[in-house]
Image 1: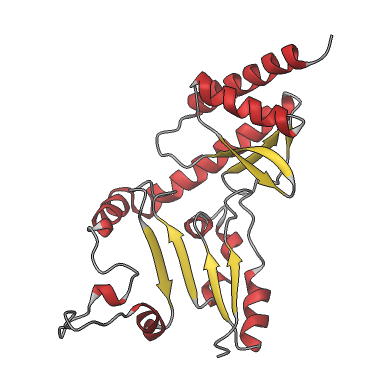
Image 2 (image 1 turned 180 degrees about the vertical axis):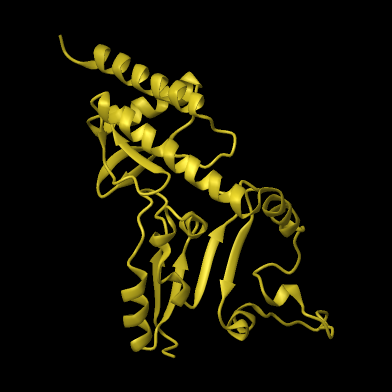
Length: 242
């Protein structure tokens, strides 16, 4: 393997939800001896869904994955997961030595992560997965993706520009000029019905709507849409020249 080349591909871009074409990229990278790493913070979980699983085709050919359990599985914020095909590659990258760090005969967790000690984050993830099961997590994924589609539909109908193809649970919307969009974001946050952050995508200033909470209902989406549209229209009505 070429030790100097790593190709990082995305499974669910955190702005747009887009997926790279993993089948072709993994094939071509491996032909050149490169390591393929998947940034799958959101999208790798889509593999559980019959509706969205096709988006992850080919990602199983990669050499390593990273994903976040604090997104779709809804566990604690600092729960990151890495999976590496070659266990020794992970160990050689993470192992640190010192005179006072005496290895035992069993597997040493600190040789697998950047941290020498940590709380038991895996317990919360295990509990969530045990509680939800495959069917429950699949339903959560498909429900939040449907919520994102509803946000996009409502915002387009209200006359605002949705910048991305809504592939999974991410929506980017522009309310006009960058300063207008930034002010609408600020006012929506201040209004308090929902919280949406901002981003910059392909040079465009946008509100980023990311739906992943198990607690979000269809009624919440409708209330949030009403609030976003109302705030945006109220601001535009007072900011436009007479």
